[in-house]
Length: 419
Ligand SMILES: [Zn+2]
View 1 (tube, helix red, strand yellow):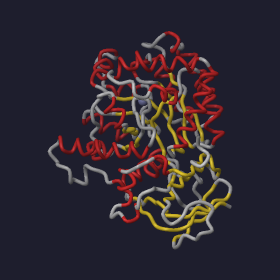
View 2: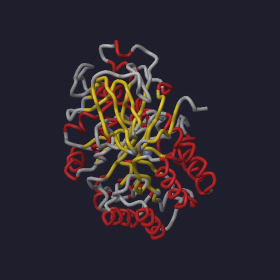
View 3: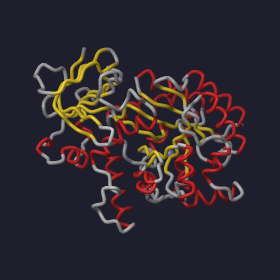
View 4: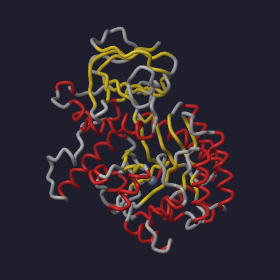
């Protein structure tokens, strides 16, 4: 049994987060007790000024792009060609990939990320290695071998049949009902022939897998898709291949017209909002309120390496900042709560909100029976004196406040032993 003491963060069904003092008990990989009241000095980790928080969930990131963060000055399509494809080519060397996977996993733990929806590369062995490594450490989530058969350097392309066979093997070894599962991951429409998209759709259907891809991130990309696919609507290109499901996570979704928004809401696909990536590449600002008002499920992701923040707290803060700008541009001002999420709502999004959207019922919450994926956070500021403690934490955030990251009841990161 391990005990954590401090201010326990919990999310309500209304999307708000609350903090109350108490003790969390962990046995094996589960939370077995949550008792509110005082914080005794006998707990294993924490004290009255500590925040006990669910691990953060990042619903859109690219593992091979961590070293490419910060390559500025390019828009999406040239950035892919000049920065990202060379970075992903490095994963054709399994030894390089293995070392980078270990390094990236450590970075995730140090910033409190315990759940991921991640892209690997087109290299099958590297994708399998990433799945095995992240499962071994105890992460919750999905990782997908990227599917591409056109418009990239030849060493990053594979024939559709080969990709279908390789991705099928990932899905067989890491099935959808497992804590770490394979995802069907066609990069985006421009990287895929219609044959490959159809393979992806049928693999996802037969294995019940999560689908990850990108959608409507930039105007130039949308124009290129329309040109390539005979003027068809971008979402329809995916829908025709069976790729728009309740288990589909579409990165970005900035440029969707109201008909596409309604269709996406009906079909149940999610948008992974990635505000830091959108500002970094100058792609635009997603209108969160518009998507939510049409019934689309939103998640939040770092989109490393277009996104430059590893910390989901900072991505949550960027979500608020983007919403403020969108609201001002729409003439709604800065006080419209329907348009601008609070810090408590942002905390909810990066924990329980992302988990709920993905159907991860035992993740993202500090509650009895849930997986013990927890953070022990000790701010060096009098945050409990703040009238809005979660807002103070989010806007004054320092990754060094994370003292311990626990996955499945095991301590996987400690600031005391971090080099
Ligand atoms: Zn992405």
